[in-house]
Image (tube, rainbow, N blue to C red; front, side, top):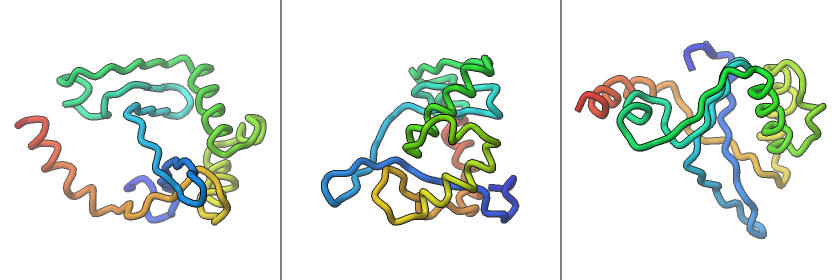
Length: 135
């Protein structure tokens, strides 16, 4: 949120499945993080000290840039329901050109904007993380 600096570049979405006319949230315990198409982690651990080092969670981490970028492109293509060639561009441009309009549209698709993403949440994270990690 701080890196965005009020430019509204952060786009928080979730996947849903359709059951007739209703949308049902898709819950998957796995997490995926891709950083700059050069580093990726996939697994069940939350990305914090407690989950990564103290819980019985498992993650796989790689810095194979080809695999990382290929994974991002395949996931983006799947979620946007487009060919990989249409999402293979500068990530910020793809977000502005494809992700945001798709997520904000009222057409029937699997992306839903997450309500309530706020900077105020950050104020609680420090004290809560200290309580959970340090006990």
